[in-house]
Amino acid sequence: MSSWFERHISSHQVQLAATALLSGATVAGLIYGGQAIRRRVAVEQLKASIPPIDDEHQAQRLTDFGAATPLPSASREDERVAALARRAQQGDYDEELIDEQLTRTASFLTPLRFQKLRSSFVIVVGLGGVGSHCISALARSGVSHIRLIDFDQVTLSSLNRHAVATLADVGTPKVQCVRKRLEAVVPWVQWECLNEVWREGQGERLLGAWDHGRGRKPDYVVDAIDNIDSKVELLKYCHDHDIKVVSSMGAGCKSDPTRIFVGDIGTSIEDPLSRMTRRRLKLLGVSGGITVIYSTEKPGPGKAQLLPLPEEEFVKGKVNELSVLPDFRARILPVLGTMPAVFGYAVANFAILEITEYPHEFGVGKGREKMYESILSGLQGLEERLAKNAGQDPLGLKIPVTKDDVGYVMEEVYRGKSAISGLPTRLALTRWRAPKDGFKVDQRWNGQKHSKVQLDELVCMTKEEAKTHEEEVLKGGKPPEVIYDVEVVQLVETRREEERQYRRYR
Image (cartoon, rainbow, N blue to C red; front, side, top):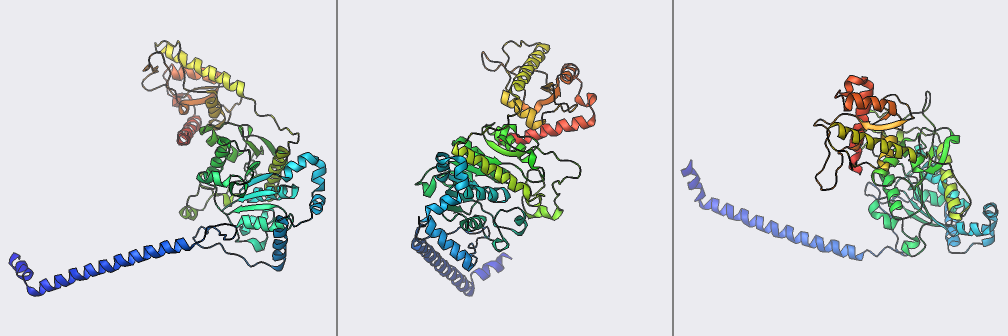
């Protein structure tokens, strides 16, 4: 075999063929390298030829599919309205006509307050059912500078709840649809339309001052987003940067307008989107100070419920992305068309009263701060008793739990009820299981000692249930499975697992 190989290698023809092959490869490499350089130069020249985006050279973002945003052909009426709006926004509009159109609002607010509204700048993020009705009310009431932020397009299924969209608007960006339709009503209003997704990294630009940072800062931001991640990021950004914001909670599956309330996010109840938002914000250190519009309507027999996803939907992407609950998409959330409108007008009403400083007050919250303090004190006492029972000195013992932690576990993890009996009164927090290696006090630092209890180890019970639990489980050494029904054990373990999952948001 080796002699055959050596004989062919030494062949003159083989050597010529190898030389030709190497020469060809070298030439091809030079050709492709030269083409790559020319392409790079051409791309740089093309980029350099693109003028900067300004009033003279405007551009729109690409769609999610990388295509240019389609520009629907305008009707003659649309062209007439657009032309009138352009003149009005440049000051070519009779001020007396504006005063006459807004006279009822002006007489209600009084001139000084009305002037505050007329000069205000409001940003609305999310232009679905809630956001579109909200912005329609704000524009019609007199707000003169409005920035719209939404990445989505008008769909046929959204026409049952959208404030201004028509069949002709299906497939067009919501921001352009809202502007076009409202220019026919309030042509003098100044608009900034951003057809894009809210992103925390773009917060300074998206929520910045009017006219690319040259004008006034926003007087109010309206959150009408239904994506939980984006909603939390927006509210956290506003909270951290002292930007006034009002947020709409879930209008889906709601039917009773008399159950809609305005209040701090810490007071909202019976609302899955509110609970999820509140829980995520608490993990980020925001426990209150954000006004929300929410419904206290409870689900019941015969009422609309979230629709389960067919199996084929799971292959289309992240099924949880627009959902309050796992395995549900927001687009199949049953919505009575009237309810987003009620939410939207409630949001707009609150923003108007705040901007004009019109006297207003809303329902008082749960007022459970004192209860949390009492429960925290009880948990402190429990840890001291367990330390003493284990033969350790409890004097000066600290626990790594705060009053806010107590409120979080009570309200968000256990929904304000005992996991054992479901009772909502005389509540306490206690460890669910005795530590496997016995109760130990951490004394690694001189002059400091504390227990190692974690939030996912705690369970909510009534004081009477907690006392028995302490004697039989924590001190007596019995596992909870011996004391409680299977349903109770499963409920507690499910809630504990929930808390462990939420740790990543802290």
